Amino acid sequence: MKKIICFLCVLLTLTLLVACTNTMSDKYSGNDSVQSNQQSLETTFSEEKQEESSETTSAITQSENSQINSSESVNETSIDLSKDFNGINGCAVWYSTANNQYFYYNEDLCKKEVSPFSTFKIISALIGLQENIIEDKSSTMNYNGTQYPNPEWNNNLNLEQAFQSSCIWYFRKILDEAGEQNVQDILTDLQYGNCDVSEWEGSGINTIDELNGFWLDSSLKISPLEQVEVMMKIFERESNLDHSNIEIVKNIMLISDNGTKKIYGKTGSGNNQAWFVGFTEESNTKDYFAIYLDDKSQESIITGNTAKEVALNIFE
Image 1 (tube, helix red, strand yellow):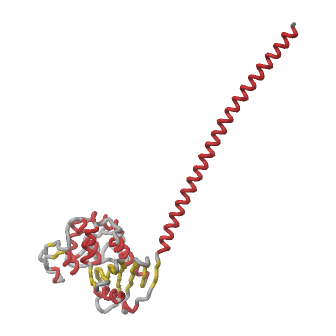
Image 2: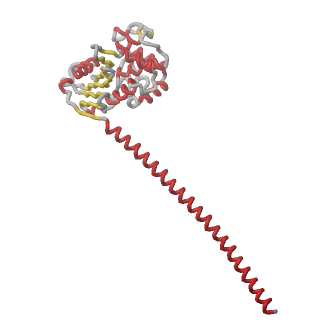
Image 3: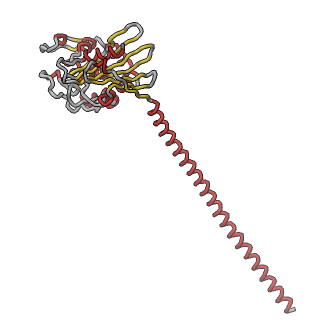
């Protein structure tokens, strides 16, 4: 009997030991399952991060390639226009929108920043219209009685007359009314050369105060290439300027119209430097140009008309 009781006790002990072992085994198995799930989540998260990183890298690469391709797609050609310049030192750059191509004569000079002189009246007119200082080509500024060297300036003038006669005092009034900060903001938006209006009153190139300004052989500088880029930005309507104002300025820039081709532009000159800047329009296609002359060795005075004649010779 004692043997039977002892046997039953041993059997009971063994049964309890087996049950405990199984419980502990199940317990550890559960921890392994959690660890396995964590590893699975971590692996999935890692793979997703790698995919995002790969997609981001791919997007950046595509963007960089797009920029490179865009840059490479613009064609640039150097040409010899020495006959058209007739011994005058200068340069020419123009852009063909149909061919997405730049043409250069004397490319280094095309990229040199110099004073815009009266070609800046294109921008001055746009500023006046944009700031509601003038309304249209008939907007008049009153003459103050000063005897100016150009007789055409000694009258009340409207925008069209002032633009055609390149009247400095008219546009100086516009810019003074607009104010330095507004002018600075518009030049920055247009990326107009060095955008420097710090010498607001000008360098004193002329003896009469109102015939001076930052755009006349002073702080503001722009290269012929940049002139072309600014004209494109304006007349391809890629700026913040009002389209109706652009049309007003375009109309007063018209130089010639032979029925099939129109030439728009503005001259500028000073200290034997001269400009003719603008664009041609034919079959709704525009070509933008800038002619710049800089030759103090010439015996005769170089004017904006000299630069315009060079341009017309090239167009022919």
